[in-house]
Amino acid sequence: MSEPSPSTAQAAASSRAIGKWVAILFICSAAFTVTDLSYGSRLVRFGRELLMQRVTAGHYEILSPKGALTPAAMAEFAAKREPLFATLNKKLGNAGSNARIRIVFDPRLPPSPSTDLSQPTYSVDGTTIRTRLNGTNLRLPEAADAGALLYPSWGTPGNEQIARWIANWLVGDWRGSEIGMAAAQVEQRLGHKNVESLLVDPGAEIASPDDRTLLGAAWISESAEFGGTAAVRKLYSAKMLHPNVAAVAKALGTTPIELDRKWQLWIFAYLAGMPAAPSDSAMPMNMPMAQ
Image (cartoon, rainbow, N blue to C red):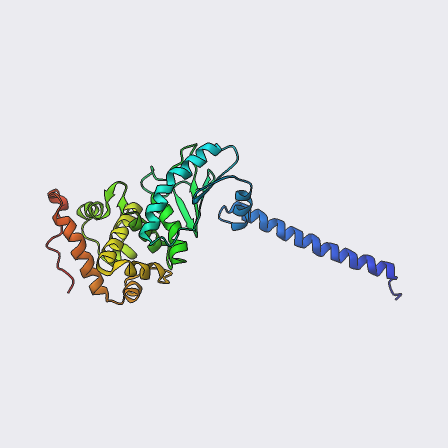
């Protein structure tokens, strides 16, 4: 059998090389297509946000799709946020003075899963906050700013759920009410929930995500009252894939029993100062204290 000519061999090699590049391009194209279908892709998100209009003012950088908001509205939102930044930063010992919070308003984010539909959803990634844009109404919970400011002040959180509770604690109130009193109203309605229920809710006892966040923030308030800011920082930094009583007790250098004892003492003190509840949801004062 005759050997193929050099030109034929080169053509075959070139054809195979082209075929490999076509295959690579096809795989890349398919990957980008799949990525585009998933809004959470960092690559697609980066490209989308790169094309957004942005306004920088003080400690804030505001982004939104072009034409969705006016620069004046974005600048006004940033200016109104400055007093909140100052208050939160002071509570953190001015550790975040040089930080800049980046807020991305995007109509393509999914609707809020919260039971309180008046509150937009948001996520915190370092000092970047992403929240859903509904029309031209710029609204964002103060806890979002707190979560973003905790990052440059205390570093990367060990668990997202605990970090969100701490952010709400740092704000200092719950939608206009003192955290302890607001949490006592939930306990009065649901009955007492121990620390395990707050962290894991194994029996699905707390149906509302908002109730669970409030009770979690109240528990952080209790931890701060008994152990100071140092205790809260330990909870913030503790690496926990899934929060649980054993991991939390270890982080605080205490026991699960002691965790529940302090939480009961703290929340029951608030319950004792509240008006009597209806008979069908009476305060659980006959519940035995942890020994």
